Amino acid sequence: VPTHPEPIASLIAALSTLPGIGPRSAERLALHLVQAEAGTVRQLAATLLKAREEIRFCGICGGLTREVPCAICADPRREATLVCVVERPVDILSIEKAKTFRGRFHVLGGRLSPLDGVGPEDLRIAELERRVTAEHIAEVLLALSTDVEGDATSHFLAKRLAPLGVRVTRIAHGLPAGTALDYADELTLSQAIEGRREIHQP
Ligand SMILES: [Zn+2]
Image (cartoon, rainbow, N blue to C red; front, side, top):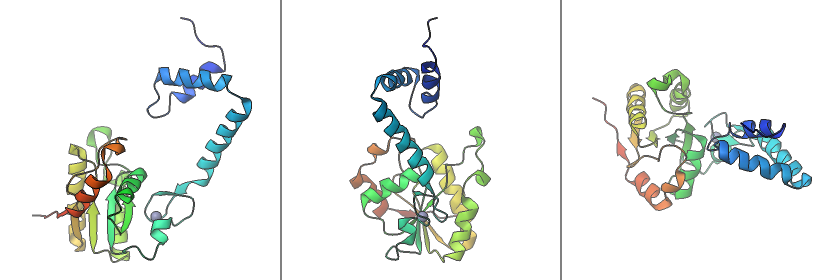
């Protein structure tokens, strides 16, 4: 089997570890990069490094930010007693695009998935419980994805938070699972937030 010479082969291998980049895309990108202007590639490398070095997790919500706390957590005009729980940092952006939600956020870091070995201790659930108490949060709005695991995680959270006496609500339709954020258009999301319902625990 003919293979690319080094270091092209290593570059292809490195690129194919990225999400959404299969072997064919990795090969196309690698061949493009090794033939591009050296200055362009140097700038791309510098931009990658800069983004990685300057971005960190907000210590409060868990979102991606350059300043800690992030702009949303630091904004005194946001409703401090209302917190929207999302799976991933990128979900904050989709909710923000809908321009309906005026509270703060909490990133779980995923959803419960027994098959993949993701349990409650792997998510930022204890942090959420601490925030509910420390920040006197009145309502936790769950905006998790619309699949079986998202549903199970929402019910688990409602149960865990029940003893804290906080109101737990859920958006009318969940966020799309995976990276298909474009499917959640702003109007749909904003209706989903407005149509939120309380999760009742037996
Ligand atoms: Zn934050």
